[in-house]
Amino acid sequence: MAKQRIVGTITGAFHGALDGFPAHEVRRRKFGVTMELLASRGRLQAGTIVHLSFAEFLIQQERTDDVSLRPDDP
Image (cartoon, rainbow, N blue to C red; front, top):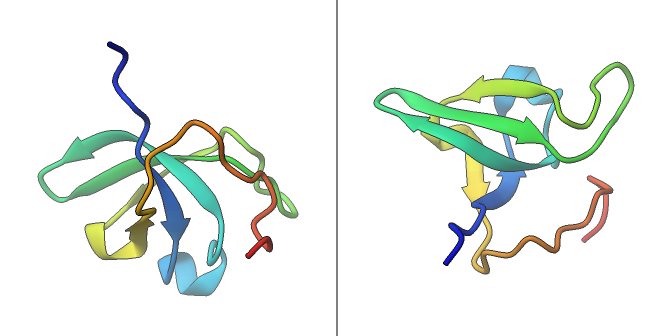
């Protein structure tokens, strides 16, 4: 059985520059998580890796590989 991706939304990171971006967890460490962006906006491209604290990432209730690629979708 394949490990399911942990998908969620970034909030409060980099003074709000990434607010609402969908991302999935690549790696979990003692002091935070490494995330891969699933959407593009401005100079930020889908696939960009960012390092966040645990408080800056909201996990979706459902874990799925089927996510929206537009950060402004409800």
